[in-house]
Length: 137
Image (cartoon, rainbow, N blue to C red):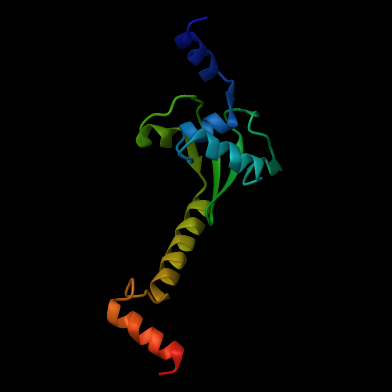
């Protein structure tokens, strides 16, 4: 069987979940997708699944990536990673999930702004002052 016919066969309905998550651009590598599945950060129909699970059109997935939750429905299958605009055609995110995720992103961004940022690495003068303070001089 040639490589091209193997890829076509996978697109007809037998695509591993880790490969689909990678092709849909949720994860940068298949290894990261595999690790997320092993750690239980991806659920299909409310159940933890293995990376080798075959994904089907109509499956409902719940993903937790960083601190953000995604509730998506699989619309199409592919095992090839394409452009981001093509990858978005593979799934549909629920409206509630999208709104909640955007609110969480705004909250996280506001928290980062409130954290004080240092001026960077201390200068030679700053280091001398720190040493004087520590030594009690």
